[in-house]
Length: 151
Image 1: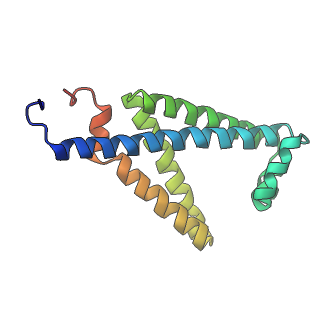
Image 2: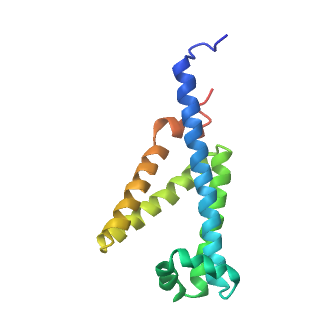
Image 3: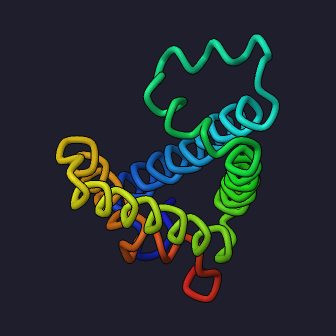
C-alpha cells in the first residue's frame, strides 16, 4: 500500500535527492580531512606529511610564507566543515545554513580569483561552487532540513 499522495515519481525524486544530500555530506567531510591535513602540515612543518604538498607545490609555496597562523586557520576551517557535515547528515537546519555559508564563501573566493587573473581556476571553481549552491538552495533540499515542512 502506498501512502496517500505518494507516487512512484515521488519515490524516485526522494531517492535521487537523498543521494545528492549524501554526496554533499561526504564532500563536506572530505573537505574537513583535506583542510586538517593542510593545517597540520602548515602549523607543524617538517613532518613526513609534508610530501603531500608535491601534489600542489604552488599552493604550498604561497601558503607557507604565512607560517603557523595560516595553518591554524585551516584547522579552524576543518572543524567548521566537520561540524557542517555532522549537522548536514543529521538534517539540522543549522547544518544546512552552515553548508550554504561555506559554499557561498568558496564561490566568492573563486570569483575574486577569477577577477584577479586566474581565469581557469577561478572560473571553473566559481562554476562548480555556484552549481552546488543552487542545489543547496533548491526548495527540495531546503525542505529536507526544515522540520516544519516535513510530515
